Amino acid sequence: MADVTIPDGTSVRAGEDFTKIWRVRNESDFAWQGYRLRKHRRRRLDQRQLRPTRGSTIPDTAAGATADIELVITAPTQPGSYTGYWQIVDADGTPVTGGQLWTIISVLAQ
Image 1 (cartoon, rainbow, N blue to C red):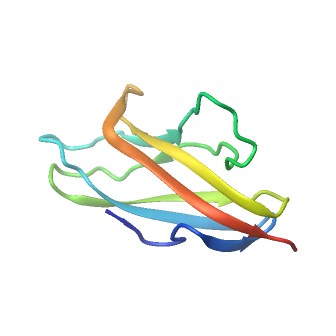
Image 2: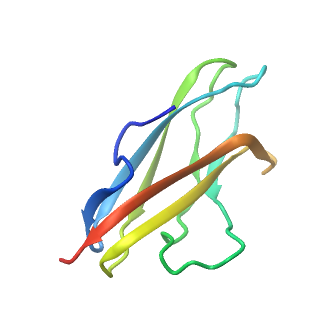
């Protein structure tokens, strides 16, 4: 639904920790319980992708309700444009249809 923090194209300092928050809606007919966010594995390795981070727990979310998903990311140490992709998965690790999230940042020299 929305980037609560760090909209695409935001500039951050090299090596800086930043908190990305996405606001999402549970469009399913059932509650999300035990869901989490994991790094999306891209087929082609792109050196400009953000490095994998630990998965983030998603707050239990009723069907039709919204949730804020928060993830702390450390910016790469080299300047440039970077993209990170994540996937919402259920408690068994099965991807949620339409549950892809991403962030694009511009890393500035220190």
